[in-house]
Image (cartoon, rainbow, N blue to C red; front, side, top):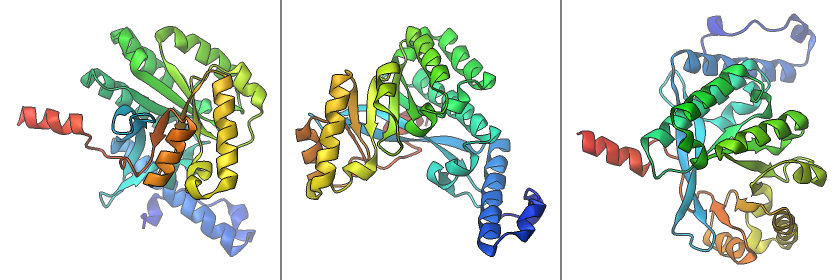
Length: 279
């Protein structure tokens, strides 16, 4: 548990709240403190998960770089354990900046790599994030052609005009864009018409156990049809077994991502090879 002396002070109004509210507030404060310590100590890294070709599921199409922090005990903490707490804060912008810096560094080090990096729409207007991206692109303009920026559905609709302008600008560098977690929110279909997404990632809620779920089969087929209409490639998230992988591939999904194909790892094959060469 985090040292209570390092925690942020509790809002006095919470003293009048329910025990559950107090517990949630304290948990969130612990999380914020843990992430701040990790950022200050530069204990931040990317874990890489392969995304496979639907028609050739033994071939990697690209990787997703997922942000991780290291806590005081040395445990590597996945983003799902802290991102909801920090996403609306400046700390979320700092994490996005570190993620793009680490991602571009990986692209520069491994010429065969194509990589997607998550981005909150709120970070688009964060000057340090954009400066970091442009610095890498100016050092090697070809890096943009191997970069995919993933913007979650729930944040894309918060600042649609800003996102549209940014996407239009960045496509000049060859950067591709993916709409992440599609179906998890309430995006109006008109946004798909107005944005410039190249890839639509179908939320795992609709792909998990799809081979045995007729309702999800219908919903997923509709999403694939929408993506095809807007000339977008599709990624099925959270593919965890062979039956689901086969169904999604046969349904026409372009790419497959999930534990069935590979867990996120901080030591992907190309890093291990580089370490052996240096040894």
